[in-house]
Length: 113
Picture 1 (cartoon, rainbow, N blue to C red):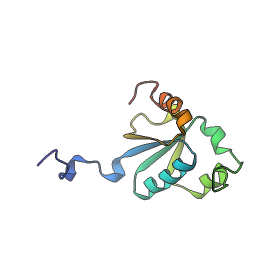
Picture 2: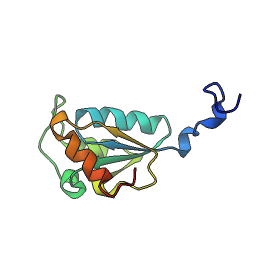
Picture 3: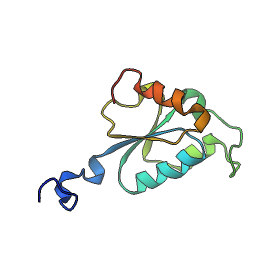
Picture 4: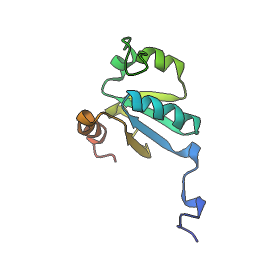
């Protein structure tokens, strides 16, 4: 049965898989902690990681700043899109529709994926 869906040996073990989540907004903030809780290595991507780490204005429906959200969550790394590690196994595009193409191009501009 090798290679069939029922053969679990063809899949990564959760702890071996590296997942990049593009965007730090509401969708990214829901996906990232869940992926961490499931045991994946998670990278969160943003246009500018340094700027994002310092965002203090309340955002989204929760009205929490990224600084506060980031300090309340752990187990993942924040990168600028272009710096997401090249050995990332899966990229999840959680960016807003208007910025999706730009986000994806920033990650894949060196044709790593």
